[in-house]
Image 1: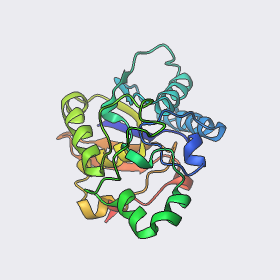
Image 2: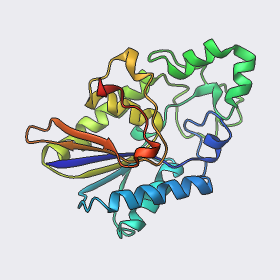
Image 3: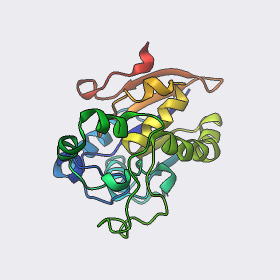
Image 4: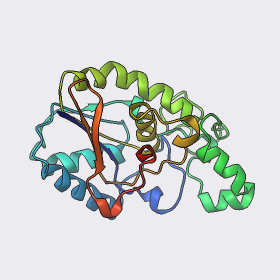
Length: 231
């Protein structure tokens, strides 16, 4: 039996401030660093030998992985960074406070932008203060758009390792994690938008002989979120 562990990065500054982050590159809070440390300790207790480490190109995920690796005694090990695992691009909502956006557009519209599978937020405008800071030609993404870049990368680079019985650790973001879980557990478009991903809480997925999922659980039960694929 081999293992895939998924970790959403620890709390970031904009998580704390309830701001749409997306591809904006923000730091972890002190709490976020502690969450990553806790994740590292929980993973270390499993006594698993990993064969591959993956993260996004955003520093809140990279730093979370670095903290975890330090606790695992793997500070100098190489890991893969790819924008295929980046957070969803929130377009013109980037950097804006959720509560203020709700006041302006209404909760129903904001929930559509945040939670619908196929509807993207407004594209980032040329004069947006973060337009030049975000190194991508992407203007905005729906969850489907995020899914459509995460899954091809997973299929090509990560799934073959799992199929060859390797243990893999991925540290990334709420929506890139949500996208991957949609595939692994075959979650419907309707259900996936309800799935909440806690920060800094490792999700352990165990695969059996035919690479099918045999077991899954959050390592920190107190901070776990409901897994919709529990039925």
